[in-house]
Amino acid sequence: MSIIVDHEIRKEIAEGALIISPFEDKLIQPNSYDVRLSERFTWHLKSNEVIDPYDLETINKDVMQLANDSIDLAPGQFILGATLEKFSLPRTIVGQITGKSSLARLGVMVHVTAGFIDAGFSTPPAPITLEIVNVGNRPVRLHAGMSIAQMVFTRTAPCQIAYNEKPGAKYNGQPAAAHSRYYMNPSIK
View 1 (cartoon, rainbow, N blue to C red):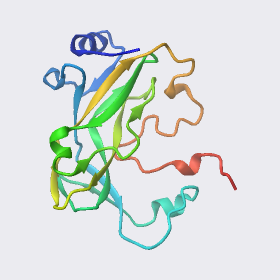
View 2 (view 1 turned 60 degrees about the vertical axis):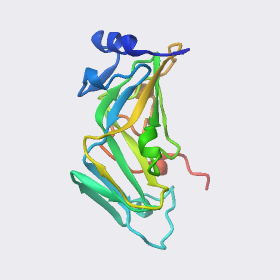
View 3 (view 1 turned 180 degrees about the vertical axis):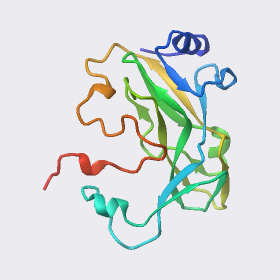
View 4 (view 1 turned 90 degrees about the horizontal axis):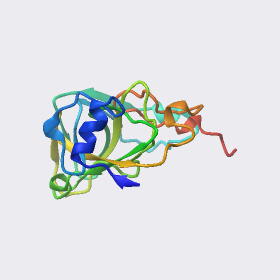
């Protein structure tokens, strides 16, 4: 296993194995690809009502969605965003979303825990949902189209069952800023 570098990213794209759409060569870094923020955001309105991950009704209750050129992220605020780019990975490449250092220095984290993208994600190509939170002390304005994170690609042995082939692959073909689909997991009750 090794991280795919700039010329290897270009080769995988040219061969059609790795799909990034829209693709811009200027976004390739030595060991990653810069991803941009889409204009779609979603979040839960402030409430004291409990969200039960197994209950779709509570997950979808009090959800605010917005399509806008920018959003001001208040201190402590959590939103879902998405990459402008849509991805399709072959069964021999995994992805990892990592934040931009310059935004982290302002208090913006772009993935709370879900930074790993399985081999075979996604057919059709889909954006990556970002779990964005402002851990700083001041509001931060995020702009649609700005570089928000980096996608690091790692070559791996071919997986037996790619993500897009898994029965119940909850986020295959997901829309931008897709909400939790945890309720589709087997219940422990």
